[in-house]
Length: 211
Image: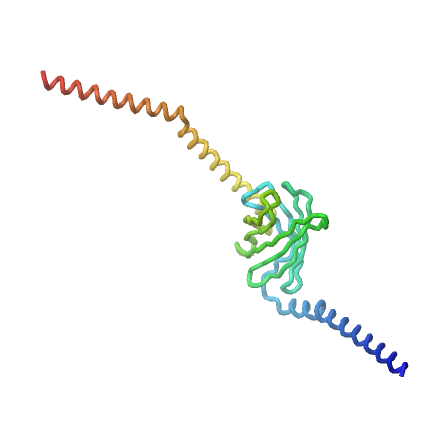
């Protein structure tokens, strides 16, 4: 009786162990191998260089690994307020869309969020938005983000973006200068003088007719 119980218990443990091993082998070996064999989407693994159009000072280097449609990797902030911070990302890539979740590699920090990108520009860019928790505002915000396949492309984009911002700032200054109280006062004085001149001219014409 006891021998039968012991044999049954050992058999059950062995069967459970085999099921766990086979399941892990199937999920982590067979399925990724099969997905890799039938994968038809663009190869996006490798390094990408990211920037934020609303904050060109923040720059990141992204390293992606892909197994079938599954994507994981790291983001390293190289410039900006979070310079030196590392983040882990994971998601999937299908039909040119790359949805990812990210979280800080440092477990003492709560930085995390979601990134959704679309492959554009002949597979040279991944463009989309990142949603994150904004601590100062105590709210969930989102901003535009672009990943470039080549660092030179990102640097050229940032240069053109900064030039555009500079031109916009100069235009604002010109508008502000034209709307300044001193400018308005000068303009009003000129209008009054011009009006007075026209009035004097009209009076002279009337006087000439009367004579």
